[in-house]
Image (cartoon, rainbow, N blue to C red; front, side, top):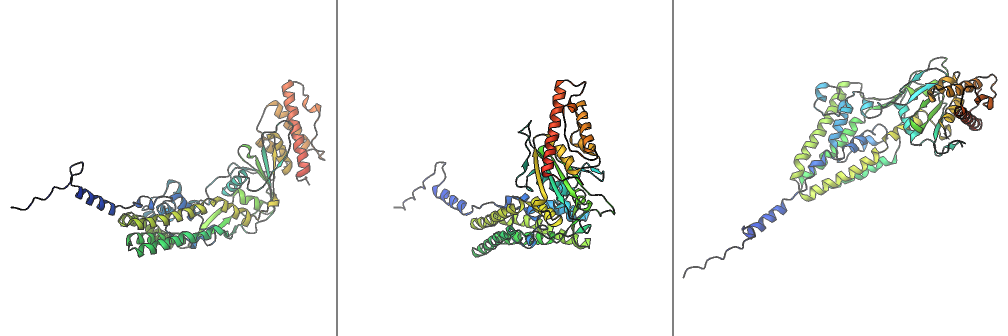
Length: 462
């Protein structure tokens, strides 16, 4: 009697042996990996680039970049323009907005245009001022200079608000170039968290013998630290035009858009020109060859780091990849914490360290009509030609506005000045119908309300 035949293997639904299917499932489970390489070098790129932009603004920021950060390839795209050699910089895909070779513009410390400026005594006018004036306008719009404005009641309108912000820039800048001190922000020391996180993740990956993820995390931390060291070696300076001998006061106005109104600045020509014509500069090594080589080397390390992570991370274990992602998450949170207020940091340097502006030097007044705002502005400056400012603030040229402007300028230029007081004879003009006379009367009422507010809060003429 021969040997009994082996029983057939149970079949699965599709006819494959169940044991083969189970073995395949086990092998599939063992080789499952979390593919984190797709976003290792690109996820969180804006936060990484903005965080690096603070290395010249915040003290110690340059030395605290030793952590594995996401989006390191975006740093290359933003700051590859610092490589002044055309042959080397062509290797790095810089963004279209960062084609400039000026370091301050690449780091976002320059390049924005400010509002229109009219000087009340010098007679000059700038249709577009510089980057410091942009910071001023941004701060005024966000109401960061004054905690609570003074509301001037208006008999005709109570809903709209047109603001007049006055600033006393009494400081005369001694030198046309200065090196402002860096800010001391406590938030920068939160970098210890991603640094420790990257270190712990590296040690953990070495402990579980996942050398692929271990090398990737360590290389990311080294590449980011070297980039912060090299990109942060520049010296931040602020320059403004030298003051001319016998120059008149620099008093004038910045005309903002919408209901933001105007900003009236009082001060010397040197102080005001720091807002209209001042510039931030970044000065790196005097030897452009050394700067080109070191910066190009850092950019090359960043690109190599992204490529190495792209190859190594898929080879790691699931636990190693989890540690890699955890280090990226801590770094991403820190980058966004430090990158949110970059322009606020620059504003703090401008007003706190360059102009030494105090809260008591700034006032804000809210008016119900644009007419009252314009009259208060002219009274605050007391220019020799008030009609020029009125034309800029109220560019209306109808007969009613021409009559109102003529009477107002006449009283402003009267010697001695008797104040702004209007009566029926000023708006009962022959040839004007009832609606025109009513409008003219309302405009004179606005002018009187602005004058009363100026008598209470403003600066009297000499």
